[in-house]
Length: 109
Image 1: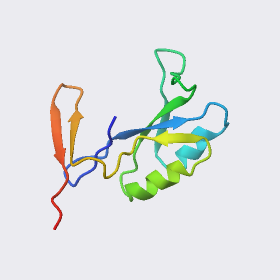
Image 2: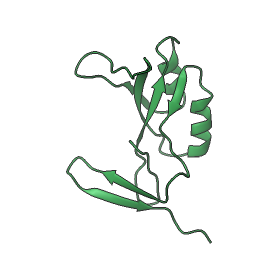
Image 3: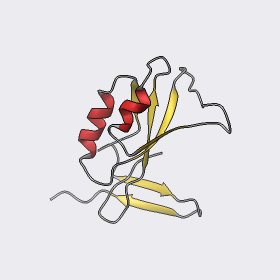
Image 4: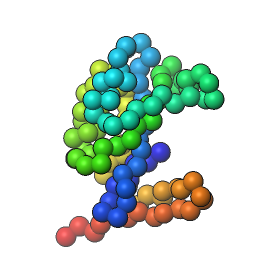
């Protein structure tokens, strides 16, 4: 999932890849985001090719996403996060009803 935030769009979710060997990772992530649910495959936790779990996280309603990205990256047990900030000028945001919303970065200047 690509998180997207703009003046007209509610903040989306993000994915955090968490180490399976470091206890308390989800608790530490919850200090930064309002929700962090372990992704499951209709029962057992989903495990990546590298043996990590995924946490589906709701982004805070307010705050600096760059600061959040840095805090997540510095969190013990977090391998990576899905906040791809400043990497795209356009994002396609899919909705459950099949609609696709195009979000464009505001022109500089």
